[in-house]
Length: 440
Length: 199
Ligand SMILES: Nc1ncnc2c1ncn2[C@@H]1O[C@H](COP(=O)(O)OP(=O)(O)OP(=O)(O)O)[C@@H](O)[C@H]1O
Ligand SMILES: [Mg+2]
Ligand SMILES: [Zn+2]
Image 1 (cartoon, rainbow over the protein chains, first blue to last red):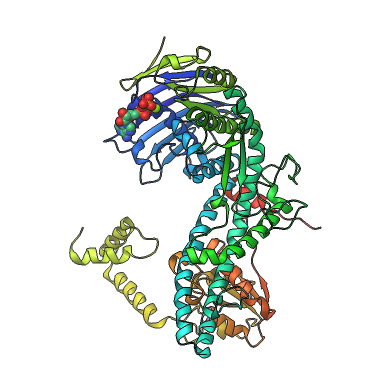
Image 2 (cartoon, chains in turn red, cyan):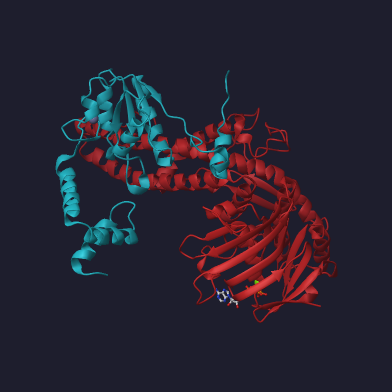
């Protein structure tokens, strides 16, 4: 698919802007602070209803204006589409598709697909594990929207369970003291009856502890059930993403590296045909394709097989082992919210070792891999490369230009025209003074 | 902001569930414009519920007496109890018309964020009802959300040793809707949870 038009009203620095676009390469050139990234951001917003730079919508509305409007016309294999979004910070956005209002804004997701690389993506390599988990989860949702619900359910369960661990930890330490000083068996029994607690064989002392343990058991079930679903999704995603990351890094770097990705769970995964959970088995436990029970064809549906259930059991087991530590610290120590997507360049971890240009190339490789993956799922997404060239050496710039030249549509921004390889000039626009004009 | 008494009414109305500030204003001015008799009837009804409606000592449903209409009805099957979160859920299940068992209202669901644990719910009362062996099946009809699910799991684990059969209504696609109108998230999850049609 590709964009044929982008029109903005009161979006970021633009009072109004209207840009006609074509398939192929478009470059947006202009000095710092003139509004190139604002255009890239607007396109990304149409695809995701969010910004890659800020968490809230308020900064997207031009200072002094009340709302912003973004319009995008799209040509795709499924026909043409016109998307209009009224960005109302603090209130619900209004979205129209082909002039028909949509009951829910999020129904627009997926109509335009983009992959955006921006300087902020350096955090994918240098930032906290949370950045990399978000990268995986965003891609999961883009490929299968149901993961939006899995993800938000999981986040809520973690918050519920954390609240429980905090209050349980506090109560257990208090309860311990009471039991030690007073300790009449009768009062302890009445606590048990009032709380309706299941008898538990778990660690902990007295009925108060077993009541708490029973409530935790119930939340462990939820965490393991939804967590296993999220984990299964991430594992199969990493499996299909890995070759694309390796290929993209090799292409950009000129066969340096190689780059690698590996999913590191916070607990031992069951190894198919291997030792039971609780053993020392680690890593993503899915070397090659042999561990994929569903085979190709069922990508994204593999929790249907036995694997989802195995993961759930392993996670439950890990939760039981972690419980004393969790109670002590009042945090959820096991689950996909503690996992890591490990990145390597050559033999070394990227984080803390890779050079600036290497880190940049690896972040770019992750985005290009996402692009390739979405492309194999269906239509070509729109590829947006914001300021990508400035940090790359000449060889990497040229190889990147060759690599993306085959995309249906690429939108490239640069502050210095000479940074853009000649092969990738395409149709050029000058961005400055609040306007966008066709360049030479 | 309005004069004291009007603002007072708007504030009180605004505290009701589902009524925002705008809605509270509309209701307040509607009442002002309406026949004073209507307002008097509403006030009387409000007073009456607060004075007369109690909660059934057996099941926790709303009741006008010590026990609710359903607990007092000898035709209702005492061997099945349907566990729900709120009295309004009793009304919802009653709409099926085919359910002939009894109810137990928990008064909420387990939600640590809100400080609600099993002790805050009517679980001890439920266990008391199970003690004499009359009840053979428990239907856990807590809400199909995370808190409802956790509460159902908690109860299932708690009740397992008693030997009472525990069931939970299936959830998935809302019935009565066309497949094409189900949103992608709901539909996606329903597909994920698909089951074998054993014929
Ligand atoms: N809500 C807003 N209202 C008005 N102006 C804004 C708003 N948000 C951002 N701007 C302005 O937009 C400009 C930044 O634009 P943008 O990030 O697109 O620059 P750029 O062309 O990408 O620059 P660089 O080459 O440095 O990356 C800044 O001058 C900023 O003050
Ligand atoms: Mg910029
Ligand atoms: Zn009753």
